[in-house]
Length: 154
Image (tube, rainbow, N blue to C red; front, side, top):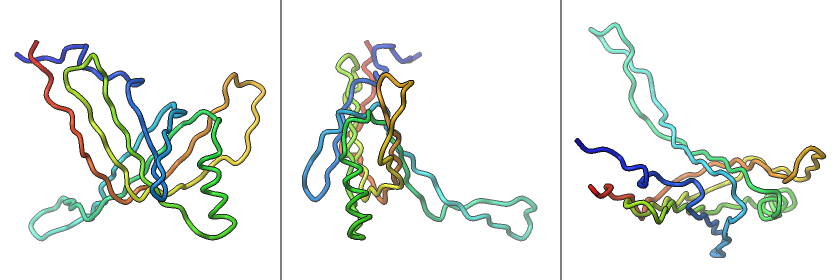
């Protein structure tokens, strides 16, 4: 019977993320957590001869959030550009999970058409040893150019 070896689990610290805005790539080394979710949009369908409500997928929506150390003005500058000029900034985020102790290799997901929802523009906290901030965003498309492979049997 197959089972997952503990060494094949992926460490949350073993990865990297990049943002690409107008062709310029920025390494997001200050990320503490990042999570992107796709949620299906479903319509409720009622049909003759069936009392229950059925569901049909009719689309999807992508959203995400990241908690970052408060050490960069990168996202504040994007929001500032929008505030001052009305020009919204769309970008890509590329996330790679790759733990060298695992036999499953790497997975890379590219989130496309990312757009900021909210950004903290100023922050103080006398109780915090290291300031962090939450950045939420939406995305319109994604690619998975690199996928995990099955773990080895050993």
